[in-house]
Image (tube, rainbow, N blue to C red; front, side, top):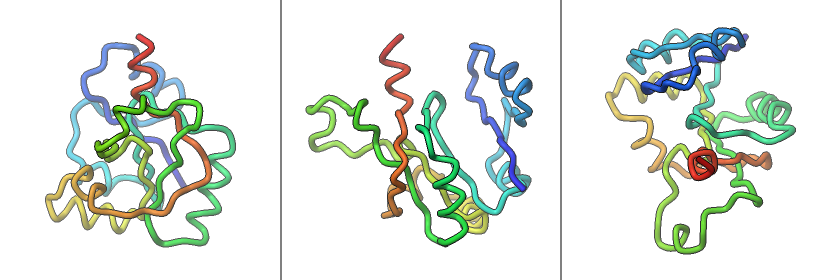
Length: 142
């Protein structure tokens, strides 16, 4: 069983209408503990707004969660790499490449009061072969 939950940060671009039309649960005000607890799947995938997983990602994630217990993230898209000077000496934002983790682990993070982004910074998740176009690409195109 799975579902899609959209956690909005005050967008004004019609996200709520798109989420509703797609059958997603949409929240403009939320507490991450409540959201994680209410999620129906055994694994959770967090992606930044505007990030776009590339072809084949659904099958790969399904296989990964069937065979693994450790967190994972997507591979950076070869076609949309940050400019060289942005990559040198700077850490990648924690959720830029998404973050896939078991719901049990997400619940433990939420209960501890730690922010997911802080938790992700300290992890060395496995790398999925599927690529993700990061959200900064959409922002840069505006």
